[in-house]
Every structure is written in C-alpha cells, then in structure tokens.
Amino acid sequence: MKMHVRFLALICCILLVFTSLAGCGDNAADPAVEPADPNSAEETDVEPTPAEKTDEPTPMPETGQPSSPPKNQVDESEIPQYEGYTLLWHDEFNGTDLNTDIWTIEQRSPGWTNNELQAYSTSDDNVFIRDGRLVLKAIKTLKNGRDYYTSGKVYTRGKKDFLYGKVVVSAKVPEGQGLWPAIWMMPTNEGYYGNWPRCGEIDILEVLGNQTHIAYATVHYGNPHAQQQGTKVLTDGTTFADDFHEFSLEWEPGEMRFYVDGELIHTVNDWYTAFAGEEKPYPAPFNQSFYIQMNLAVGGNWPGNPDETTDFSRAEFEIDYVRVYQKPEYDTNVKRPEKKYREPLEDGNLIYNGDFAEAENFHDNTNWVFLLFQGGEGSAEIMDGTMIIKTRNQGAVDYSVQLVQADLPMYKGRKYRISFEARASEVRDMNVCVSAPTVNWTRYFPDTSVTLSTSWQNYTYEFTMKEMDDNCGRLEFNMGNMGSTADIYIRNVRIEFIE
Picture 1: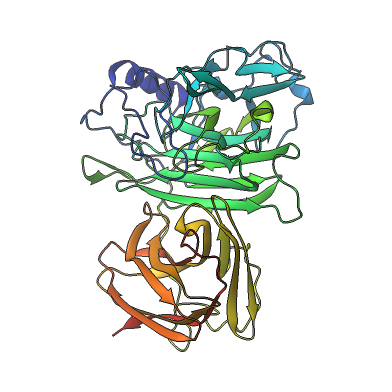
Picture 2 (picture 1 turned 120 degrees about the vertical axis):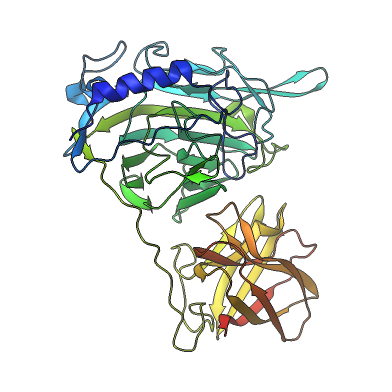
C-alpha cells in the first residue's frame, strides 16, 4: 500500500490548525538551536499518530513537482540537475526584492534563545538583495547608551515546507568574533513530537566567525537531547569567508548525508525521539515536513560575544542560491541500524595509537583529533612516542585547546580504568574527562583537574558507566584557559575494562 501525497498534505494542514505548537530551543546547547515560530505555545501532551509504515515507496506530494519559475527567478532549465532528483523549488535571488512567495523575514527581540544579542529585524538594512545575492547583515548601534545589535533571518515555513529531498545552498560567511551564520531546518509542526530537541533539528551549515575555516553540520534529536556533528576543516589557508562554497544535504527516510563542495563530510542514520516518555518508531522525528531558515546571529553560548576586533562593516552573510530537489518517491520501510562498537586492541586498550607510535593527521576524525575553540591557538605533534601540545593562546574556555579520541564503547554497568603519563614544561593544570558528544555532552567520567609537574607522572582513574550504552564516548584532554600556556607532554594513554 502507498501513502499518497494528497493524504499527507491534508494531515499536515489539519495538524497546523489544531495542534498547539511548541517552541524549540529554550534550553539549547551547542550548536545553534533557535525556535522559528514567533507564536509558539507551550507543549501539549496530545499523543501523536505515528507515521504509517509501508513496504512500498512513498510518492512525494504534488506540491513537490516542478512548477513554473517563481517571480524574479531564472528559467529552471538553467539550474543544475541531479540524477534521480527533480527540482522542487529554488531561489537564485536575481530580482531586486526578496521573493515573499518563498521567504518570510523574521522579527524577534534580543535574547530569545542561546543568549544571543541580536534583534532580528525586517529592515532593508538587515535583509536585502544585492547583485543577485541575499544578504543578511548584522549591524551594531547604540541604544540607551549600550551596544545594540540587529541582524537578519528568513525562513520558508508555511510556504516551502517539504518531506525528504536534497538541499543545495551556495553561501559566503562573514568573519568576526561573535558572528554566527547558519543554514538550518526545523519541522513545520514543532509540537508533533514535543518540544526541542524531541521535534528534531537539521543544521546544514554553522560557522563561528572567529574560526571561519571550520564548517559544522549537525543533527539534533531525542529525549534526552542527543546530537551528531560533522565538520569540514579547510587546511590550505583559505576560509569559508574568502569565497562562496556549496553546502548540501541529502535527506532520506533512514539517512542524512551532508556535503561541502560535493565532498561527503557527515552521515547520520541512527536517531530517536520520545513523546511523554515513550519512544516513537524510527525514523521519528525526521519523518515529517521541515522548512529552511537562514540567519546571522550575534553572540550566544557557542560563539561568544563580539569584541573590539569584530568589524561590523563587513558582517554580511551572503547566499547566492537555494535549491531543493526531490526524488519521485521514497521507501519509508526503514529500520534503525544496530550500533557498532569499537573492539579493544589485542592488549585490551580501547584507545587506538595510545602509545603514539604512529604519526597522525589530527583533522581527519580518525583516532586522535586536535581542536581549537574560542580564541585557543596551539599545535599538536607526535614525536618519539609522545604527544606534544604547544599552546600560544589559552583561549576563553578549558576546551579552547583540546586533544580527543572518539568512538569509545561505553556500556552501562561496566567499569573502566583510565591511565596515562604526562608532564609539562612548567607546573600547570589540565582537565580530563570522558564525554558523550551525541548525548548532550553528558560526562561518563567527570571533568577532573590534573596538576602536571615538570617530571613524568602516572595518572590513573576508575569509573563505572551509569548511563545507557553509547558507542560514541570520547576521551578529552582540555588544556585551554587554565592559567598557563606551558607545553604539555602525554604518553601511554589507556582506557580498559576492569573485569
């Protein structure tokens, strides 16, 4: 049996009229989570009807079939095509004004979510078309003697919602501390599976203005909050602020794939959600219609606030085009995949290359990864069986300078032992923990301060895993904002089961 589009469209319309919408993101953590509906109400406890399962592909809504080009648009024959996809809608921003048949400009007071500073404005100074591109501009002024920020945000809710497809966006981000451009998606009916994060969120692109060589793609979901994040790091000296790059998402019933300039950077196929404590059938919550929104935030929990280095004369998020494609039908008979857990090495070590016998690329998300955030500056090097971390700027937070190894198998009820040797060029501290990047950064082993001396010392800790099984545990050595930039040396890192 097939679920026909007209039926789906009718259901969506009924839900939009009769369901109280719940805003998402009131307690959002990194990265950005922002409610899109200015008229959101509190969550209801109305039990949702799970999407019907079928053994046959689901035809897409008739609204998803090609139509005549919207106003101010080029002919669709000029738009690149992708095998297996049909162009659903697009905006090339070739007119003189924003196409309001597609976009709504959001208006919002400062501090709505994530402790962001900007007011979203409908002013032509914040949202405008220039030279065939949409510009979302952040502006700094004074109000009542204090710094005041306005910026731009647009969204397609109620105009260009869709279920499954391929989204392709060409954009150029601004550079500057505290600037936070984003291209992301939220469900049309945010209350269907409950408040954020249960409703789900898809972040196609986020960039921090002080680290414009890193692009983030993230999926949020669950109860409790879980997230999966991929990155594309430019290592050739260029940044995403230098020129336009293409960011895309392929969203299917059982998988999402994120690309930067055609390169696959992140795949997600395992997620969940719950309503009133009851887990809903996979692939909820990503089996409902979503819409696109684009914004330039100022400040907030993740990027931090602007400072004297932020040049607001250049604080512009430019979008060259947005294109959405869709397959004629999708197979919705999908199952949640089984989790795969990393096996320990022959000597029982769950840490790979823990003896630092092999040189590594610290940006390929394999084994050891070296990360810098919020002003942190430094370098990592493996030499003679030792990891050497040199810090030039300790940054604003402890994880501003960070060495991690992910994909650690964490089993509820099992006992673990962490051990390593370390020293520093001068007496200083660092923090150690085992975190849960996909479960709202829960700590399986709590943040623990370690005082390093100038001679080698052995450090050993034991803990019991008390949360649900997780195949994505992460060992962290955090060396930022600890009152010192002294070099740190680490060797013989182990995590093992205690039988």
